[in-house]
Image (cartoon, rainbow, N blue to C red; front, side, top):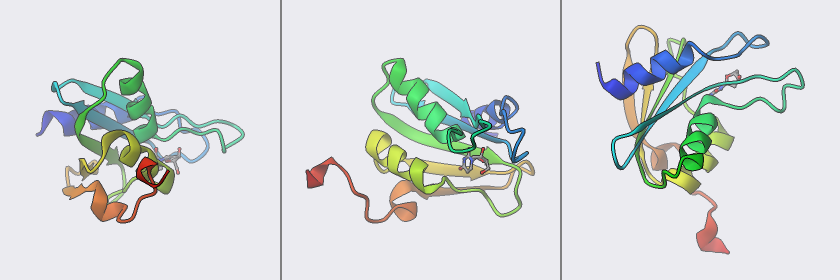
Length: 127
Ligand code: THU
């Protein structure tokens, strides 16, 4: 199995999801091949919950990574779980049109590009 997919599945184990019970893992590969992982971290106010993808992006940014190749997103759903709208915006801003690999616990995968999920993004080019 792809190392990045394995990393996303492993990161999912650390999810803190006592409210939804829905655990998500993400693994983001930078241009040097380093893997930055994230999991969802829920909060009692619900609105302060962080998705796995944003945790991975912000962890990577905070460690100096700036260019990214791929992200794998792991969840336990038969229909593969795509990133939410907020995460699509963040992924677009910091990662551009990267490859997005969705995976579930049965090992089913699908590869897309972010532009397919987020076809007409708002970004700094409009400012
Ligand atoms: N969640 C993620 O972490 N990533 C996604 O792509 C979809 C949703 C989380 C947020 C929340 O903790 C739980 O899944 C249910 O929405």
